[in-house]
Length: 268
Image 1 (cartoon, helix red, strand yellow):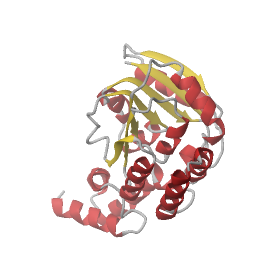
Image 2: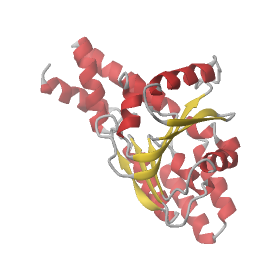
Image 3: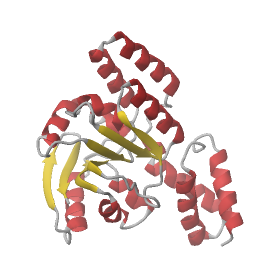
Image 4: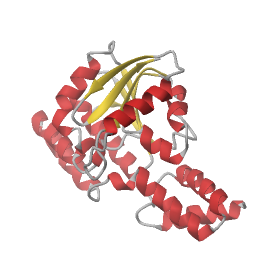
């Protein structure tokens, strides 16, 4: 396989309006594996796009209106109406499948999780999606630091500007976490509905990522319904999957159930 072919694949994928904001490292990673399997450039481009849709694109329920949302958030923040600010954050999160499913249990979700942890002063949010907009619901001290990672450049720009508007310390960053796991040390790492997507890119990616993160606590969640809304015994499936994944690790693991997802709190 020639580097020229990989470059052509990356260029072709980035030319698509749907994928032009995707992390180039991730496209190259997936595309390299697809070319090794197929050695046909046209087919590899198609399968790379399909995989990118499965792990990211399928979760957007509508085209994000980042500029409009930022203007609205900034205006409300200046007004000092924190209740309206939270409602606006929730409305924005409803446009992404992963966070939409959690909206009805936000208060319960964070109160139950954080009650099982020692005080948290820093958080790493891996494959974050719109989840940083949930920060107003988290019981965090004012000086807490938040670091968010995802594969979409336009989303990351939006999140950095949101964090600035909200006076949140930290940053959001574009990153292929499989090739380049974050090295920053935090009290807590969040991997919410993340592992199934990682495993679609690379087998055994889930455990590899959990081991690589430099955090005392990990909160790992799994969806209990498909994107189409079907349950299909997903709680049982993912509970067995996570048990098998971590069976050889000397980690303390607590299990929490929510209407939206199945959660495991890991103490490393």
